[in-house]
Image (cartoon, rainbow, N blue to C red):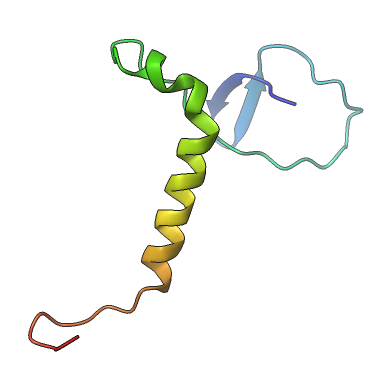
Length: 74
């Protein structure tokens, strides 16, 4: 389910009422809408989920890769 809204402090005001009863716990995945001035976004919009998966894989690899000093071998 995808809903749109506006963040105001710690509150998210939805554009339309959600189809859930009050008090229901939910998990929120925040995504900013694309910048309308970016001409390339339309080409990549269909691949939004794939791009998010690639970004997540890169971030996980970054977290799991040990840092090394430039003067170290290997």
